[in-house]
Length: 405
Image 1: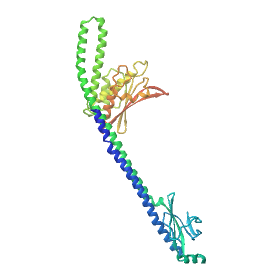
Image 2: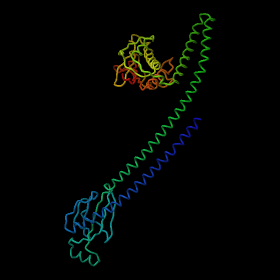
Image 3: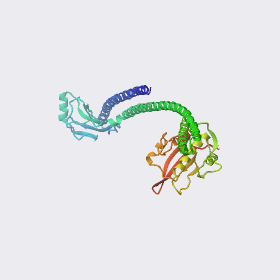
């Protein structure tokens, strides 16, 4: 079943891939069309600029400021000698077009046009005038215009930005669809895992009850020297029973039935019921939070138990500390021990179900604690306490949203 689901998910990605390809093709065509349009605009602008400059010079007027895209202009004799020039126009034309022929060159985003235009006011030499009359043309000059395609291509930049935006949107949709597909697969697996775990816990609890009853019966029948083995059997049965309870707890709603309560009073009551010695620093009256009290108790008992067990074989160490303080809209509970700390590579793995560094740990407690805390809108973080560059225990920080009083 899972294989079929995976194939279907991969197949559903093809429309998104096709959309991306089509957008890229469309963008390329749009850019090419935009480039051709920019060149056409430059040709028309060059003609207008050449005509305007010709009229102004022919009438003996100063040449006005050309269009923003004009970066150079020049007036030349038919032999290429400069009559007037500005900007990027060359001092001499190496090659000149024939009469009534337009020369055009595009390089480095610049369109250079050279065209022959008739002048009415520019003085020509007698030889030039006679040559023009013999050829049947009026008095002409060569007009060069250098047009910056970057300026006229600003609209092209907008087209590029639009195409890039469409492509980015399509890629984002593709990534989101892939993430959604992975999430669906993960949720499907979790549902299947939950069903299997619920069935297993139900099936395991009955044999455990039978084993516990048989252990009690054997303790009455067997001689006292066999009681040690029976004690070991009983401890292992209890451990397995506790593990099934943890798994069943894992499968319950992590939000539970939240109510508003005083955190200090609840935490003090929880710690007083435990057989451990713990140093506390809790404000009274304390801030209020909204959470299922039973799940809050389960999470904090797990954290304090871990702190106690981490230093139980280390002599002359002070008891673990449990403190509470306000942090803006949050309340912060810190549980820290004075043990040996944890390898840095294991810190994040601690929240994976069934991962444990203890010889007799179930590996479920921390995962449950984080699940309950996050369901209440909070966060749980574990880090090593470093003193003098040496690991000196573990600090667990719990942040929970504080209720307004």
